[in-house]
Image (cartoon, rainbow, N blue to C red; front, side):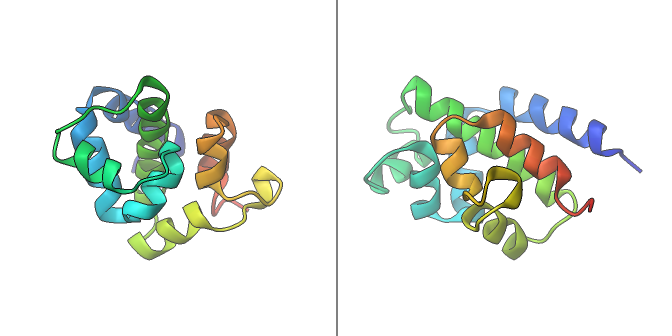
Length: 123
């Protein structure tokens, strides 16, 4: 059985290597277009649809947010179902001073979001 550290390392490698359109597609399918737009820091969720269809590429900052969210999503999905994962991203998180992880990623707190995902369910 894979350890938490192994899953986190695998998630990082996959989030780094996966084409950005596929990252956007997988996040949209699991989290929904509106939540992905929040995470990426864009006001129009149609922008997410353009990324998914590879019509446009996200700006560098948005791409970094999407890749972080993808890494976090993989860490969580290794142990949790889709509904729990969606709820985790949108809900207040005590490891992030009651901020939603989606908002933490949006403002660039990647380390905090990844740490909160690694610690989820451990105590």
